[in-house]
Amino acid sequence: ARQLPFVDIFDPLMALTRARQQEDPAFTFFHSDRVHPMLSGNFVIAREFLRQTHASPTVARIVLPSANPEAAPTPENCAITAVTRTAQGVTFDCRENALPFPVPDELAALADQLGFTDAFNRELLVVPDLPAGRYALAIDGAAITTASAGELAAGINLAAFPATPQNAQAHAVGVLERERFALATRLRILPQWRQFRAMNDCPTDDSPEADARFDALLASWQKEKRPLADDFVRLNGEFKITRAEAGALRARRDELARQARAAAQPRSHHFTLTAVPAED
Image (tube, rainbow, N blue to C red; front, side):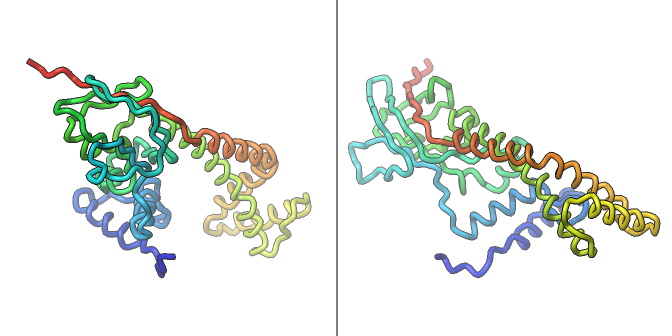
């Protein structure tokens, strides 16, 4: 729909690599093969994909009703109910239709450097018409932060606060997804290795005869001291183990996918903003 001819993930990754190597010549986003990016490199690639495809940065925009509706932004991707204003502050319930991105701890510094949270992980809370002063924000009873009436009127990004229930839910989904992905990655060796067998004119079925023929080929490579022969023997062993466990691995992978979808469903949260007494 945006008629983009391609997404350039190479040049931005290289530019950031060169910049980091000015401080640390040994720095890299890549594994030792110098081809495949590590988790940090994949994070940069994901950020570039979002940026270059003009993806929406909004998780949700929680905006309470204002006495001046034209001056307040429009709520987005959420449902707000039970708004109650008192002399002490305001309470309300909100169900957001998306979760913030759960940045892993090991990527937190990189995410800050890239400005990821403000650029692509906006979970804004906007509360207009509060009397001047500071307010303590709690969600489902958990203390999150304090902010001034002016800051709340402008909007604070809830995704920046790890203690929110939304972030906790997102991280729980992330744990399930990482386990599912690890299993999916392990199962990937099955089609890959069968293709490797075919490339070397060996049968791809799982018969003992097919295994024996390929085992013999690998043994001849080791005898000839071909490059990577030992690695191929190791991978062949991993293939056989994974093949034997494939049924259980696929069942666990699919169950984790179901659990992740269930864990990601929207939940309603109770917000409380309470005026903080001014210090003497």
